[in-house]
Image (cartoon, rainbow, N blue to C red; front, side, top):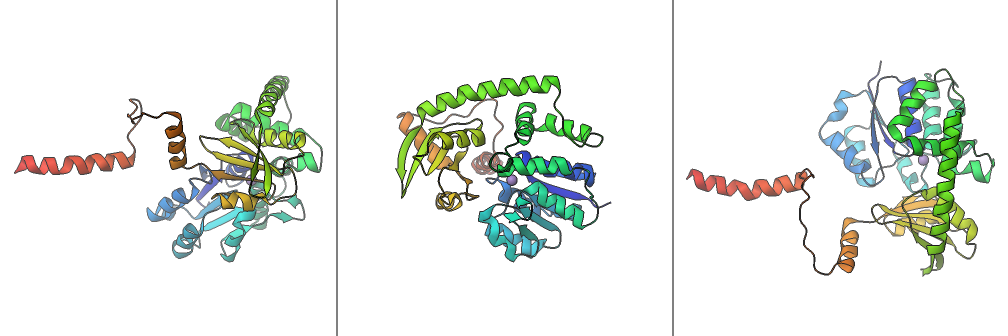
Length: 332
Ligand SMILES: [Mn+2]
């Protein structure tokens, strides 16, 4: 059996790939990543020659930047397979190990469906988890809403958010093999109802706080939000047809963009250092931007280390360089 490593995204589409890897390929080593850290993780994996321990390495529902792509090309092009559906990653198709498809005969693509097609092509998958894969695809592309008007896919994503990644993953690995069509227990339905009610209250508050801004040539509805991002973006877009797009700001992570009108948000996010799809994209808030926010909020401030925080590698290096000369001096 091949030893497999999988780098995948943390959302439902990302864990969909992890579920297929575990169920179909059995012995797969899963590592979760986000657009903000995938390059660092993949480069470390190559530089430290970790890839030597694996026969095959997948990167799913995520893409790498040009610099990382060149490192892959130079050092492990025969082992890595990257499968993604983000429009801003299409340039990676110049590399034989990358397959970026935005749309195919099924509709809009997603990571889990591309991974399923790959497994089918190499002959290890037939159709046992097709219902799950299709629901992941419908949720990730919002076809559940725009094309099928069927909330089942969204309920699966809601359940994933309620359960949390590890618990949901365990639940899927346990149930899918003998019950490939996901059903909702009475308890699940109650949790889903509670989540729906909580969302409605959140939406009401966020809609009240929404600000309209002119950004470049566009009118944007801007709101600070850290929960229910996809759903909130969509509902606010429906409520605000006067906007071109909605920007949801989570200071801790970044900005999510959702279309109202037909504007290319992949381009807009790219101009702020991000990427994504035409209808939904994102850009990061950098640590220096967060520092600027702190400068605005608190005039007189000084950074102090928290007690229960492990020192970062950078801090360790700093300590090392500070303490080293002193040790040498005492030896003399
Ligand atoms: Mn995806």
